[in-house]
Length: 172
Image 1 (cartoon, rainbow, N blue to C red):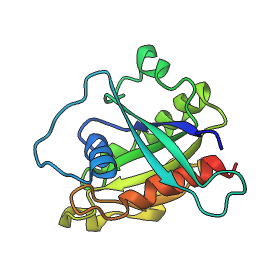
Image 2 (image 1 turned 120 degrees about the vertical axis):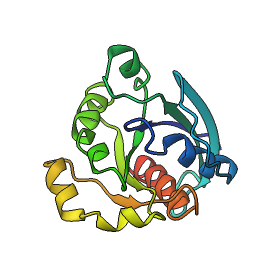
Image 3 (image 1 turned 120 degrees about the horizontal axis):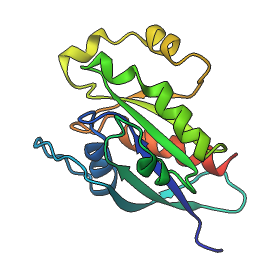
């Protein structure tokens, strides 16, 4: 059986925890110290797929892309060939969700068949309790995609978010 590889991108504002989510997913580690990503960092992790007739696993190539706050063309070039995106916002900073629809729109212009999963990160913090799922969905408008509350610190739903994205890509 040939090795199946799929490229996924992480999208979102600076400081929402994209790199921390990748690190928790790939290395099962967390670091309190903030490190800004410059350019792109690519990691790989094999994910088991259940119930697929041809493949029992997929290698995810996880592209952790520097903050796309200005959504410039060079950042969009990283989206080419992507099969999916984990679109991340910070539950303690409501403004981090305000541009997610624009991030998705720009991503889908380059990768129109890609699958999307939304991750509201930092669910372990008390300030995250004011998150309103209905308001979030209203903000996204026509973009209907699964949304999980995650915590890179505790690991809550991190594996599940990447697993859901992998399965959505494979079962398209």
